[in-house]
Image 1 (tube, rainbow, N blue to C red):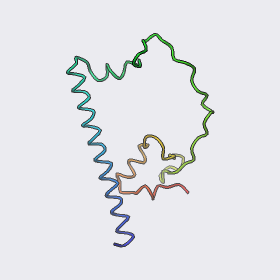
Image 2 (cartoon, helix red, strand yellow):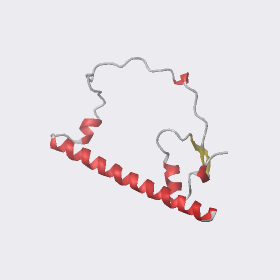
Image 3 (cartoon, helix red, strand yellow):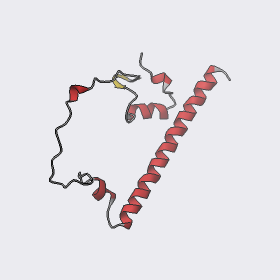
Image 4 (spheres, rainbow, N blue to C red):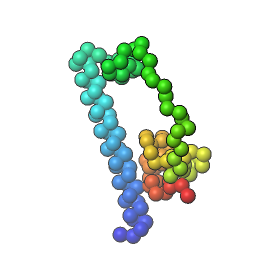
Length: 113
């Protein structure tokens, strides 16, 4: 296969992986909603309450860690349509990254630098 064919194939694979991930997420969400409903709750009641297991709603948490204690990660990816939007490759993918993949761009094309 040529390089161009491989890049095109990678784009198709990236889109298929993203679509499969979204299908899996939707299935998991439906299963969680069904299970919560079986127990007489809505999923929002269970996850939107803001209380952690073993802690009452009135109990305060300990002090937060200083936000400056960890250095920010360098940008690994940059939005070609808006250079101000970057992503370190850590954590949840930003919407612009997912949209670019859905439009056929590969992660390699979005690399910063």
